[in-house]
Image (tube, rainbow, N blue to C red; front, side):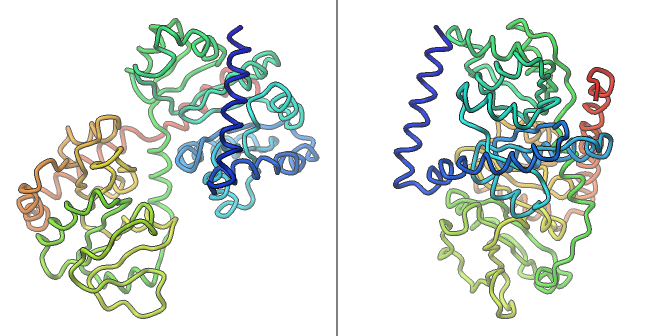
Length: 407
């Protein structure tokens, strides 16, 4: 009965996406992209090799799972590695940035679509990154005795699995072979509903940001703009962050350069900036103090040029990625909405990340950051200690797989 209700519900969900695709570009890509599934998986099936399958909701989950994918590929080269995505943004990002990867959209979560997909790709194991549990997919994989794992999983009490009405979704979770979790709280929640096959390993994002920080990177435009001067970077910012940015910029010494990377370039207001600004994509030489990054995909690399950072989203729905700048061990300022992010809570407690709730405190913070060398050295050491303790998560997962799965 519950399977039937889910089947009806999921079809209504897809119908709603289809109807919205006539006026919504993202929904249109969702529908049109899935027409490519037969072509995408045909490229895999003709290789006649078993597959290790990673599923990622979108871009962030791909970056999170990539260190483990790279590690397994080096250890087990006889397999084909497939990455599936729920969202168009993840699919398009990897298709452009990593053209050699085998990628596909996740099929519709119906028996026919899922069964066809699995038969064609012949997965040896399936690894879900962080979340997304599609009941039909998991049920079919379970019937075929294909082991499934969750990596960098994190659970919250308000999720459906822990509600009185969540029995069906709870039963789906129990078909996973092992949950590699970010924290102890997630393990305790799963234990409460009878799931004991858990291991607290940490978050593979730490491995990824460490990898990115160690990659060679040069950018003549940015290096020319910075010209060996101290730099403040505001990353992934929204209009809701503008009041804080105004106060930070007004408190900065005049010799500081400013780089602003909006989360959505076309929907960020810049008229509040008092001085002239330059835009990264411009062919005209930069002459101003402030540079707007109006392109995608380079922010994580830019943090290496900063002297301190502000990460946006904390005055809106939620904080953006603070691990990307954290790996460079420079002070980070954020908004007050960070309680859902374990790394932010930990780094605030350590005194490396500073939430801003009262704008009046900003001048004091900026003075300390720009003049107190002892404070900066202590902050750097705390960051480095925290990052070093939390890396090598992918290696821990790979060791488990080697011992418990015949690859």
